[in-house]
Image (cartoon, rainbow, N blue to C red):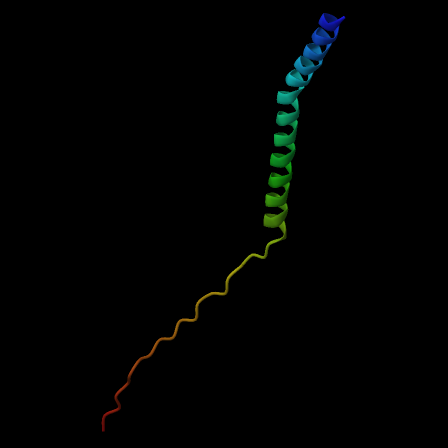
Length: 66
């Protein structure tokens, strides 16, 4: 009997081990999809000019002669 239960637990562990890569791949795909969706939504809702344009001041001296 002991051999039968040992084989059963090894089979269960092997089945879980085979599912591991599939779960990791699924979880990684979900994270990438949500990140990409957030990136595109952020770009779609962002304004055209995120930062104000700098103000340029030109100073010119004029001499008036008599």
